[in-house]
Image (cartoon, helix red, strand yellow):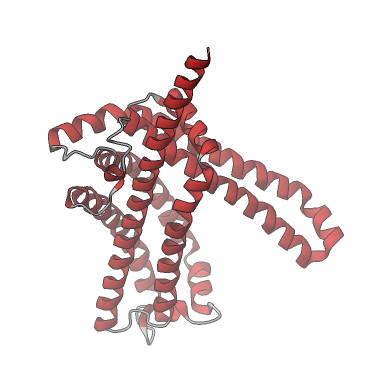
Length: 300
């Protein structure tokens, strides 16, 4: 990455030149969510469409209607979940393209024209896909390892701590695995930024990403945690609001749809803001590496 690309100007999120790619990510995610959600919505409508209050009954305290829906329509739900999983896998290449287009825009301080943006995106897709497969496989392996560890220790935990204590310890083990997966996802983002911002292949980008993550982990965490907290608050706030409204009337349906779109846009903007800051940190990390190499050369 050039010095210009690593400057604060490269990481500014708000110029309008980034907006098309943010909107593209939002649009593709919204279309995918609608295609998946409409199937589950149709199933819920067939099951309790005539119930007073509509599907708001699914969100009532105690979850009786929700548990009954799952029990009575388990086969249909499993089919829909399978189809949703396959559809999510099919959408991975689309997500790779849209996120890489955004990274190309974020990592370059210039106003890059569309043909150049598309060309650079195509150039980086191969290394980005390989990095995605490697890092995702690593994350799955982490979850699997901790899950198997929790299963192996479950009887000992229950006998030593009691049922409740054993469940808490089991959950703690799984929680540790999720924290590690989250940290790996940060490293994955840094690697992707290195691929796009510094035009590196997969292995050099992974080495550079690991080096930058070790050197600048306080900056990375400081940049990520407020954005992650904001995303969690946005999602939790919308879920709490949805719990008390449902979709029993047309005005509520329209308002719920509006809130969902605001949440979707907010999550994409927060994600883009994090990648923008990561691009700045990667640029600064590259400058540090060059300076260190120069110092070693002078001392030699």
